[in-house]
Length: 477
Image (cartoon, helix red, strand yellow):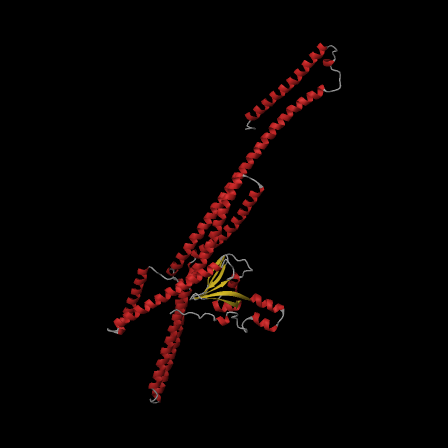
């Protein structure tokens, strides 16, 4: 059975911080004023604790309590501070994994999950999914361990009929092969607890970003199409807001993608996340050292009991042997400690161990990369729409300029006619209207009409010639 830390009891769910270890609590006892209470409030936060069986409870824990429980330094805990704005981060440490992805701020150990901001509505689906995954993993682990115990008992009974000492290793190998063949037949390979929790967090973050990107895409296309149909202030404002949201979401998706890419490029960081393997390896090494020490003590005790009735020389010889054994024990203990350290490091440095985590991270890297590609496509569509709008505005501006040229030409021609009319309207003597008889007056009227008509016709002719020259020079369409 895997070593599990017992969950916090419900009696301690209100406050799990010892009074002598929590400076905020000490300050609250020494000073009953409002300042001390505010210090306590800032030092203690509510965490949602999910154990290895899927049971959830809300606990109050200070920074120092979390540091002792998870083995994290204060620098890593500041990443989860909601007041500070840190980029998306996934850190693997000796005893815990720190996750800061979007609205998800969690600490994962080999046997429990500490989740911050559990009352946030956006975190509620993650809590439900985490509970389902952890409960399913607990049942699968229990059934697998029961199946392993059954086969181990069965093959042990079979090999008890032969030579126990010579058949023990063979029995274990056959049992392991039988279990492996059963797992291969079922097609089920259980992930470790920390990977189950990590997968749920990654899925929640990637799904949230993908949902926002899909919603933005659904809102952007109608707004952009409407803008191309009718350009006004309202449509331009809607497109501006959509573009601002697009830039913000693209930056968030890019940060998550860069973090996953960084993890995939560094095998040592991925090896640090194998918390269960490191914990089990450490327990095995500790048990081995304890067993060796107990065996040495048993040998010394038996020798002392057998030599109680011997003479002084036998006692002296026994003491000399005891000194040699103690020296060997010291040397063996030192060697065992060195072996334990080297073995613990070898677990981290094995490259094939990270294949399982690498496949997990690659799946969500592909998902977040697809979301980024979708946002990039939407950004290109927005840029194309902006270019189209600019072309339309330039075309309208060109039409206005052409109309201005035509109006300016017409104004010039009309101005010439106005000059001619002004010349005729001056208060001077003109022989055209000096005749007293009706014949002279009729002749003058004909000449006046001929002058006005000729001037108008000449102006129109000049206008047509000017427009033709403009088109010939490609000044007008």
